Length: 540
Image (cartoon, rainbow, N blue to C red; front, side, top):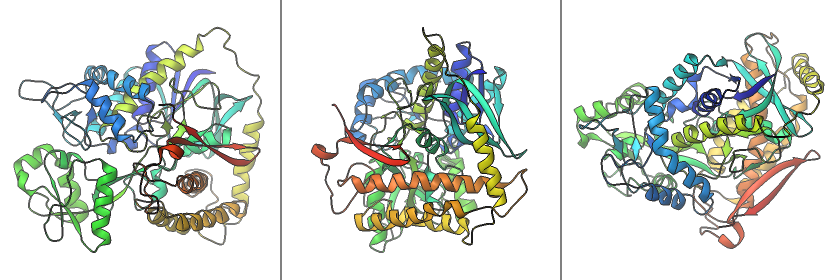
């Protein structure tokens, strides 16, 4: 049995692995894809740290900006911990070899992103997440950390509320695999893939870790808070980084009019753009005035994406954009030590978790900071917990492994469902965008959740068409579809329950924040096979 199992090969998982290894723990990292293919690579704009390298900044200002953006739903102590650790996080990344851009005097270059009061985001052109991810992966290889790819998380192994590892589907060999561990860290990313075709996320971002915790008896929270990025390419939903606005880009409508401050927070910008589109206007990002040389130097990836997906050169043409789902603030509920609520020996970190850093709306540049800073903390905390007095493990059984194998075998034996779940998933993606999107309405939400529950109730009658076991993408897609239905139900239900507008959650019928009733975390869990929920009030 290994010391620590880390599920997820993105920035949060690899940061956890490095810190746990440095504490002397034996570590195995398991992921659905190759580490450099994770969602971290899509984080372009930068990673926040109040270094003050370009203009004056302070850690206190970083804390204040983060708290203000959360609309009252952050854990202030967690925000302080992360922001105060930010300079050390940048120093650590530099020591590993992350090639940040530099000022003329050799300091780490910084740019301002939306909602920030200063130029705070450290960046590597517009490839920041990718550069960080490659560096972390190289560091893990140098440390000899075992990384297992192409293993999809099925379920956590739970013995008397203790998590003792997890069960995986080995995509290549077509087998159920058991990996036992004394401690487990979940770092599987968010659930933005639910909004299929209307999201910057990969289709594989299906909340696997969140769903596994819910099924295991743990708690998830604030699932209704989904951030929509204001600037994705109109025809492909490909992200155009906030760095384009941070460097001075304009948002204009069909008349060429600027209609909003480009560096407001993402929730406000997305609603402003959606309003223009609703009223018949096209919306564009205009960076032409920045000059071709500057654009190619600072935003080479954006130029490539515009040419590839829209057939335009943004140095000379307007970029057609629309807001799409981008980041999920909710997820696995954790305490200040990043321990999963309702389970033992289990931690969660990164976009799959809800450490109450972002609250109802995330600041650009804080996601990369969270996954690295708190990722390191998760590895340290899990390692330290192994050495505490009285640490012991419940007697293991093989019950779950047997049941999981029987379930998977049953899927191969069933005939495919008469309805194509791929078609259903595409339709659901569009409906999530329409009904659980930037503007929400209770009648539409109630109709949608009832429709989804009918589909969910039919799962027992579904099978898969491809009967081979090895490299079966049909099975993987179906297992992800199950997670979409389970997570999607909570997402819609939590949006129904919250009759107010707060951050990324907006209802026209309830346009104001209601602190008396809803300054609270919407928390969900399963008890005796029934989904339960409760609003847990914020203390401060």
